[in-house]
Length: 421
Image 1: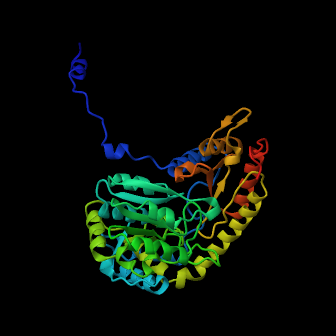
Image 2: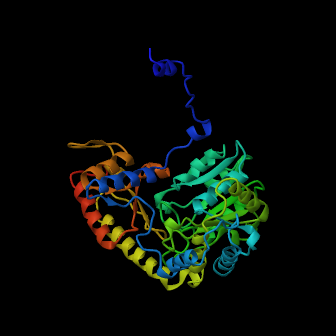
């Protein structure tokens, strides 16, 4: 036996087990599908990718220039952990003027995207065994973030006939002594639903009865909203400032997904806890991105003309898709009032056999069929807690959406709805 073989045979087997916390977390389906579609496109397959929640617009030039100038002027060093005072002050001004909620800079933490802000908030306020109440359909990461905090996600279903809005009575009946956090997202990913102020007031009345219950209000899509719908910040409601953590960022409205810049605002004790977690993980957000963020916040109310022109394009795309899919047999739609997603009920197609493919059993198999047959990448609704639907992102040009609809329509043409609508 050689020396190398002898050494190999004497090696102790390495323990490759992972922590139960990590094993409890599911990988993100939106990321997985986007990566798969990208790989197909790079291999030469003409896939239309409508899975990712990313605007197709370039970052506005004035914002990009601010980032470029930051590099040229030497703003390339570590930033304060909570974010630069300049940016946090600008965020305070924005929240006061646009959202009617008042904060001081020490009640703001800037992070590497709103996703980090949400995770840090969940880790900061939840203890093992606490319950995190999440209306479904939900953004894919909410339940997994609860599990990372050793908390239990409590999923409350909503109905397409109610525009996927949470029923206050259902909320009240599911609150227990373990309920610690309610997560609300308006405008919603994946449904595009917008919570009316009166409904939020009813929810606030229920929250007010429960001293332990906090609210995380994810408002990342607030500027992508279609009149007559209007946005209401939950923290602006009577008695809710003290128990609300407001999360927002720059990725969606300002087409800054790659800049990785988000923030959280709330009572100082909670924000200090988020700041402490960040100090022992990533530290401060990019100094360059923060200069660009300041430029974004001085574009005018709600982003000014730059953002309104993007919202106008999103609305045109939404209108095309709602009209087009509404003409297909066996399809149910709740018209989005914000964001850039369409969450369509295709469940009447489930249970049917497709020649050369097999049985369409659920949203995942239908998405696989549409990718194989139509070469359009979409996200199955089971990733968002509602298997009856599929999410279509219309953050793509109208021409691309027209082509994708024709592909989907053609792929479905051989399938008859099990239950005509």
